[in-house]
Length: 75
Image (cartoon, rainbow, N blue to C red; front, top):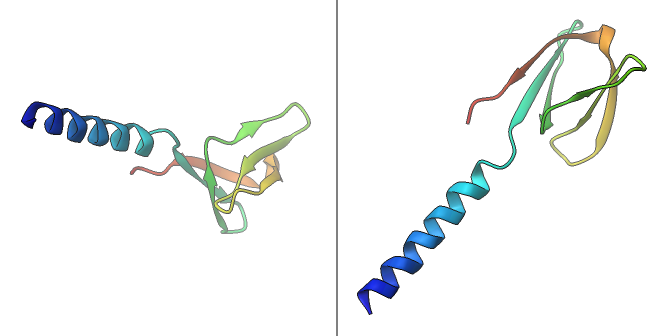
């Protein structure tokens, strides 16, 4: 009985850890001083745009000339 209980607890903890580590957020700092938080790593395109999914889950694009820096947000 105890072995089954501890196995279930270990499984729940492992799934919680894996779920928390699946997505990394990034901060896009623009030349005009804005900071945009993204869900996942922004993707550069050949058209000069930076595509990202914002914190609300909406897909957005930003001209790469407007971007000063992109940095990973530590968890």
